[in-house]
Length: 142
Image (tube, rainbow, N blue to C red; front, side, top):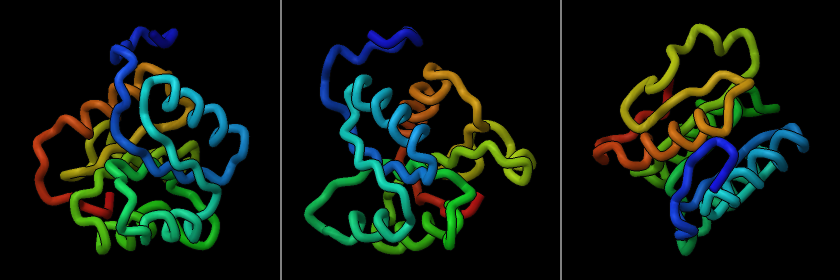
């Protein structure tokens, strides 16, 4: 069980493609998600994410991405990946001021947003809610 109180019984849960250009944040969140039972593909750049998503043999349930990435924004990356994987869920995270105009929680079908800093509980509950929500058409833009 994590300090945040979430216990998934040690079962291996879904696969998350996590895109974050800050090494420390990527490492910390990656460990949290793995400890919670998720399979995590952690990458630093949008190009690495596109490469992983291009492998049709891989299963990816959620794109967890920072909004402010170098070269391609999180929403632009999501649009690219959703063209290849229409059922992909998207959870945006950001600590930047421009992201504050996004509403908390769900920002569209198949998408959600968390403002940094966030708690372990908030992250895990937002992911679980996003994954458990009825599967409808996913939207790429916030």
